[in-house]
Length: 578
Image 1 (cartoon, rainbow, N blue to C red):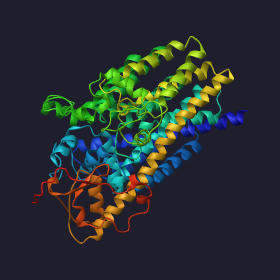
Image 2 (image 1 turned 180 degrees about the vertical axis):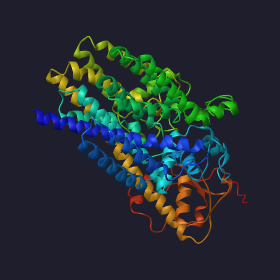
Image 3 (image 1 turned 120 degrees about the vertical axis):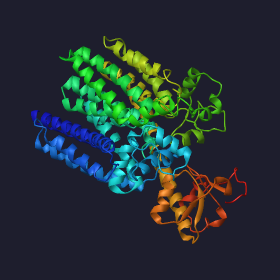
Image 4 (image 1 turned 45 degrees about the vertical axis):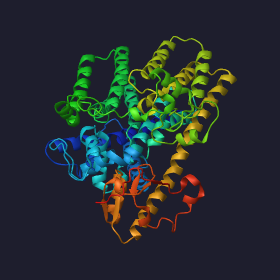
């Protein structure tokens, strides 16, 4: 028995160390990048390998860890880095914003732009794009830039998503191993996968979108707090301190939510465990979070305040931009935030800007296709999420009262209230942590119920419904990527086969990068001088008649009508050329 216990403890130590490494490497990359920018250098190819070496050295200096665990963790992480980098280089980003200002920010950083000393990007960036690149937080993009500068491939940068998601999977499993000790390893693994693969995370996993970080980093942050206070793991605290310095530079709302939820759990655990120096620890956390804003986020927070009267420009302050007004679905227009939140929770996924129909019962083609878009505006947690919540509520109530029930109720009420604290709580990408709601209900039933066959059957049914949502999102993402890659490669091949300079208009900077990589000559011209729009996720405007887009089309584009090239006339075409 002691042998098996030792083996289990060693496995948990290996998982935890690997997860810590996968989080530490990008966070150390960010620290080194910020340091490099402050002393006047740019993001360069030495930062990422230096971060890997420093993170490995950090693990190897741990005295209380077995040598076998240390090296198995290092080898595991090296293997994960290599495999995920290859996957990221192969997979194309199909999101609109990801191929737009997110990747443009990365490109500018890699090309030498230092936002701390020069607030303006290069003249090759159009002014609309430049506004977001210059004034929006860019923490994730900074880390991605260190990877791209090292590997020389823009597509490789989104590998960061996989590293942090895999790390969060390790953290969740560690937590469940301690929190649900009576469940089988396979049951814990099943729940781990479901918690980690939030549909919001899945649909943004292979893109340069950053909303998924709210959920993934919050999970990592909360589990690290648990490990520090419950298990005395000081390294867990160090990782959280790195996260505190970093998160303010990701996005305005992400910093708010992680600090809010992390702060609540921090003070609860601080009080329950009677930490010896609570004031000192609280001050350290506050100072590091403030340093993250002032040092890591000097541009944009401080510079935005100086130039536009608000650190949150362009969403607030002088000449603010309303990015939400034209993003509301017809079915939600004119309704209160409360009504829209309820509608989004009950309805099936939808992203149709041309319809005011709401689907609650039955599954339509639109519901399925919206399950794998990167920013579904309604029902973003999956087709069966609401049903899972209802069944989990029944299971929670039927479990009965225990003295710990109040803590679960506080968490549930807090999650519900969070949907109404900031605007647009109906949009899953902005409140992705609400996906934890049914799991809080399930955790209570797991700990204090499931004693009858019926309750165990309902429990399995809930997990199965959530699994179906994960499968729909994941399979849709895979198919969509295969089709999108084939589409982009085919268009590039036809352009490459042409002997003329390509005239086009687009803000798809990943597409332009691929043209540069292939040596395809092109010229960016005004949109209104081009007749046609290639309707991909971030459209390309060009004259279709200049190229042969009928010859040697990949077979996959003809399998299904929606897979083929979608051409639309350019509604802004004036016939004028320059």
